[in-house]
Length: 145
Image (cartoon, rainbow, N blue to C red; front, top):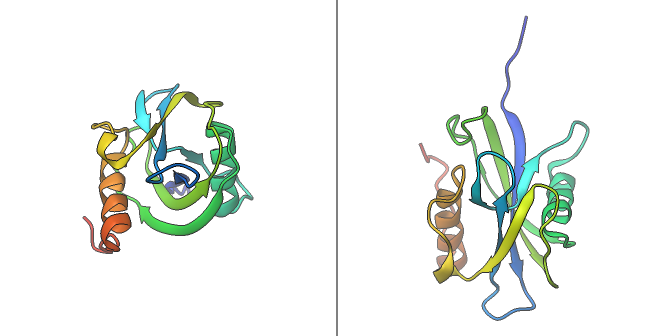
């Protein structure tokens, strides 16, 4: 029997806590799909999702992060047109100056009022959920379809 399963990924919303208003980091993707995205990537076989988040943050933005909490899991089969993925999103903090590396063509530091529109994947939705949580303490609904 041949099983097909979604591929687990992690996304890390990184707040720079050494800057006013705790801006976040977005990366410009080097690979398809091109555009701006939350840093993240695939979980390696044998790796915990927490270790994957820490590794991906280091690889893409060259910062050591402290994971604060697991925010939400996004699993819409259409969230990534390349294949069915599910994203475990973490909130993290870091200090210092990020540098684009690995799959990141470039990066930018954004405040809430500066976030670009039309992010890759379902990252517009994730950002909307994140800002609602950060500003009002309201978590995403478990019945988001």
